[in-house]
Image (cartoon, rainbow, N blue to C red; front, side, top):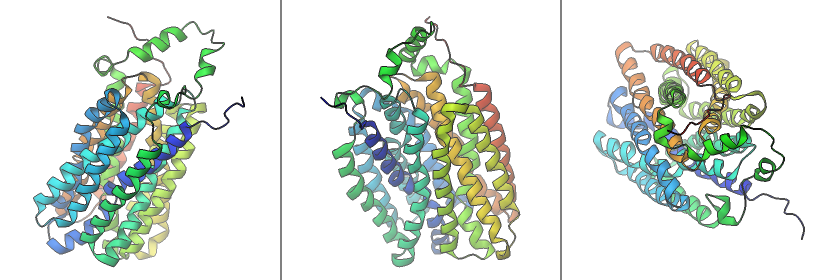
Length: 421
């Protein structure tokens, strides 16, 4: 019998990319919905951006539970359930008339669906399918996170054609019509469902003379969330995620379209800068696979440095004559974010991979929710107070630097030797 040349796990990676594109597209399109909602209702920026902060906080709270659910329940059921919740709640955003409607539907319901569609389930799926080349596999899957920012251009086009209410309806229907059939047809959460072993499993089993390998593999199998919570490494990973994505990134991303419009750029140009950020993020996510060779810390620190320099470039934009600085910002910030996004999760899997990794991964995502509960709201509050986003941008740069420090101290290059009680 001819040897199978294509590993089905790469199909699963592609499905995960689609799921993350459509799922996170709902969150990341907030930036283009923000201006027309402000224009229609006249609310201040802090209270309006709070809907994204609530969304991120609820996502962070739900993530450990959805990750644990994928450990104990078939992940396919989890993703389909999440897609249904996310699709219906996204469409329902178009019916909102009061601020608390947005807080409930976008802030509370959509993150429940997203936590079942996105990284809390996707990350352990990739870890299940790949014993080697995890950085590459997860980098490709994480492309969905970058492509979701391009989704903002799709959302902006729908807003321009139909208005923001019908645009939310279109986004919800897109999830229901495209994502659910694809998951039904092609997704598998574990290679055993297809009668396969993880990619690289045979190489790990054959010819391994490392005396620590047995202990290391036992460590992989024995890690639970409770045991991982007893390590400083997990808490440092949580802190790193809190600072980079929750506080630093979302403080900027929630307001960047409105920032560009305030200067005098058109809504479609502002959305295109958002899309360019997403394209650059995809390039960074693909490049992050180099962490398999040169180490997780080097890649993540490089991403944080790029993010700092890019936000500094954004602070120098004064008027429409400085368009080139917006391009520098979008390309640098996108690439830096793309380097960071897969690396922190793959670094965590270096330390805690095993059958309970879904719950552990969810805990790291909870850190993003904690920071995210402050980022968008604080950015709006600082603007309402000072009439400028520059204070918010300064806090973001500091957050990126501290995030890098936390990750380096966690040191995923050093395998934790698990010692049973």
